[in-house]
Image (cartoon, rainbow, N blue to C red; front, top):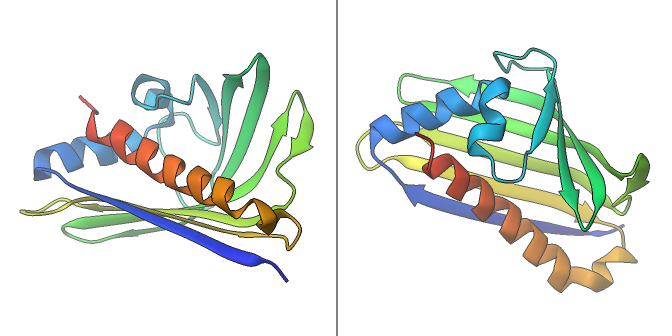
Length: 157
């Protein structure tokens, strides 16, 4: 059995900004405009994200093409909130699987568009016992992933 890692970032934002962020997140064709790491992206549907959809985000890191695959697990919506849960389906570098020791990678993004609302990003995963030796790097990865997503969504125009 492995070890579980989690990290949560929150940022208070005006309701109008949160509404813009939801619209940008739910439209895959807009991702390269606001997401600083998604230079290219494929999605089940180009103009909307719904439960069960799949996303593939492509980025270049140190000269290698990295593909990260996600499934939209759930979308819950109410009058003043929207919660979207993404499940990691794997990552590859130059078409070879990487990060095999990370399991159940999940990102939950909650948009609260009312006074004193904002955006919360919660990332979690499990690491194999062998990989948990690198707990400092895994914690940093979870922290960076949460903060980068919240920073990008906070800057949506």
